[in-house]
Image (cartoon, rainbow, N blue to C red; front, top):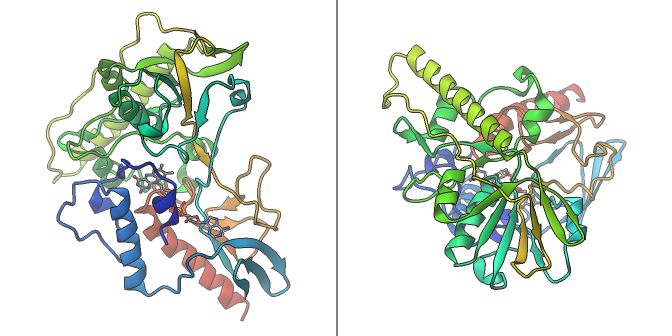
Length: 376
Ligand SMILES: Cc1cc2nc3c(=O)[nH]c(=O)nc-3n(C[C@H](O)[C@H](O)[C@H](O)COP(=O)(O)OP(=O)(O)OC[C@H]3O[C@@H](n4cnc5c(N)ncnc54)[C@H](O)[C@@H]3O)c2cc1C
């Protein structure tokens, strides 16, 4: 139960979605701190309480080892027996394996490499400098934590999504939800593939509701460099396109804030402070373009380069060469009666967040019931 939150997250992690957004189908957050951010033990408790309240027949400690198509539907093999069913909903998550770029194979052996699954807290790292590759939610959070442990941190920044924690006195995710941005449906989005591949936003959940962007990290002492392009002869080479990456992220954040403002002015009763605009991301005077990994300055690398799903147990040919499930709004293409939930922009922009489950589950269950009704 709540396995990924229990075993696959670092110790200090809190949700980046405020507590009032941790609602599950028919099960709102009822605690005393709606604007706070759940710690991992609290998330486990919340999900376990939901399971108990719904009395769902959950089989814990059971791994699905294969799913195969049979005449009447699907044969699901688990490590505790076989299940035959007419329909299957794949809810195995989109973040089972850490995505590590191919350049990792050229890292000198003296450097310890970790994925976010292996990182629990800074004590897990050797003393000395840390290179963090990737500046989305995971990368910026780990950069901040590792820096505070006294280790010098260099952060490689590629494409990223910049967001302030609060906007006009409200949580930025309040705006995402209420302005309708998060509810945009998959069939209304122009470039769905791109939307599904977008990095997670640079956000952290803290009691102070603090913004954690690149300006904050640089002020704290993190060295910011461009995207890790290659490692040659033990030397890490960084892209020179940092200024462009910053400009793009700032532009997109500005456009999003414009969307919020337009929505607020079109609605009569939105209670919020006046519009704000934020300082552009400051460009380091001369960002370094290379770093010799053999000199001892860097002792460990954290690959904060994203996650991907793991479908090695799925014996039905519905997975693309990129390793993604082929589906149309959660109905798996080429596999009647097979559905998915919990993947990025599955049916709406919010699909991969906890609060996305409610609307998506209603839609998916509707399709599933129609499918079953057709066959009777
Ligand atoms: C680092 C990180 C931080 C996140 N922070 C937030 C946040 O702040 N707010 C938010 O709303 N969302 C957050 N998310 C997203 C969130 O974890 C999930 O994507 C979302 O809750 C969807 O839940 P899920 O149950 O579909 O997937 P998951 O939570 O990934 O659960 C899938 C489950 O399926 C199990 N599974 C996989 N394969 C098998 C198999 N073969 N047999 C049996 N079981 C299997 C996995 O072990 C896991 O328990 C975060 C994700 C990550 C990776």
